Image (cartoon, rainbow, N blue to C red; front, side, top):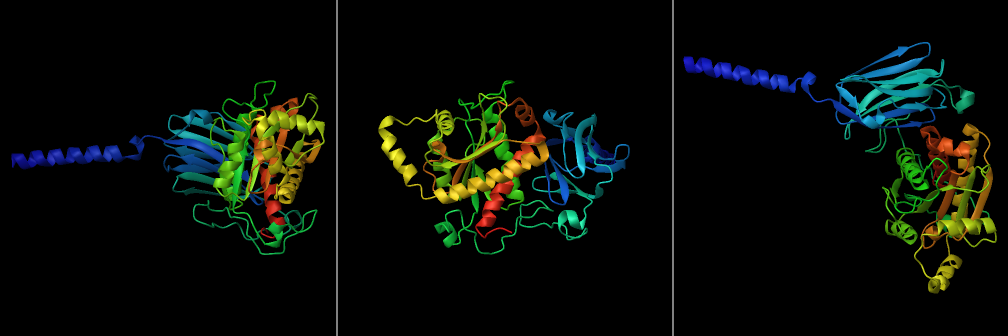
Length: 414
């Protein structure tokens, strides 16, 4: 009997220990390790990346209007502590993150007065993430469709709920300036895109007065654009470099060829001795009589390891560039969409044009290829803007719109 009592006591102690260990209060906090956001046509989406699902509560406050979430048994990654993001979106003005206490993270979204229609908050798995969708009030005249029309629905596996790829409705391609290229005659489309963040590693590219490096900004922009192209465009996207590594110019298009990409887009930041110069400049592969273009090409090609004896072969590649027409068409779409988007949200920008140029990074591509100088690190205002998430997100959005406009011109987009 004594042995049985001892066994029962031991069993109870084990059960109590297990219950304590499994209790939510004693579990290690989940870490909020990252976030991303995007303004869709109908709603603003915030995605918080977590190491595991946790309970949360949400409430609204006034003066000013704001929505906040408290996520329990959670902690912010130190890189996110106290972060503030400012927007110029239809509904959301400011996003704030804070560690309210040792076990609670507060996410606060300050809203435009009277703009919010509703919100949806939900978890997604594999990987764990908390999604906040805030729908803004709309009118038929503003959107081209009545308020309350069908909301975005979940689509292909792996895409977040509420995000859908652009539907590809078959239609006739539109001609380029020189008529119907072979790409358009054959009804070819775009499935995979290579994004090339300029410079990297021992090659910093341009440096701003405050020390902002072209290589770092270009990589960040490419990562942002990749997310939008995958989530909204339903496209396959890869980066020629994912980290701060040195990558030879000629290897970049070789990687795109090996991956069988349909488009190649190299992202760069500009610099000019004239500090007042702003805006966007976009290039496709060709020779140029413009001294300014040739000066820029000399700067961008400085890291090439090719020798003079290879000049004839290089020139032949440029002359035989069969993707000239499509590259120019892609450059035009990207240029006009990016420039227009930045002008709309951030004021006047110089239109520096779409031009041909002998850039090494474009030589050897087996697909339409362009190089985009998205803004100026040498201009004080654009340099300051480039330090903000808001401006970088706007650049990524403008590039995305240009790419999708090009795909639409092939008769493959809606």
